[in-house]
Length: 173
Image (cartoon, rainbow, N blue to C red; front, side, top):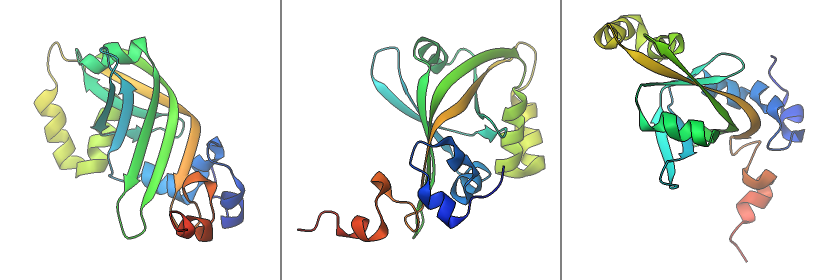
């Protein structure tokens, strides 16, 4: 992957998976911001759940311990949305859509350990893995390969594909 120039970035429509190459996306995919996973629960109501994540270069991998209720819900309705965002004076947001693929494994999902290292450092990650790993531990690896990507930085990319001037005029008569 390569970083897109401002011109290339500005010309890509929301939804284009090449936005994963943008500085906005790459910065958020390697950040310590939480991913927010949106899905439909078993009772047909929407859910948004904050989770640690690991970006493999092709998939966002989230992990949970079996038997979390979200596993059954995701198997029934695997279409999901994920947001990774940073609140700041100039907020940034990465919006992803895709299909969750669930794989249950015995032990710790490798990407879970990698996420813990990115979020808390080697020592803290090792301690956390040791605290939860043991005989009979089962985890679910939730992998989402983005099929739709949106990127917002409120400098070069705005909601609705608008320009900075159009965005500033919204809501004014």
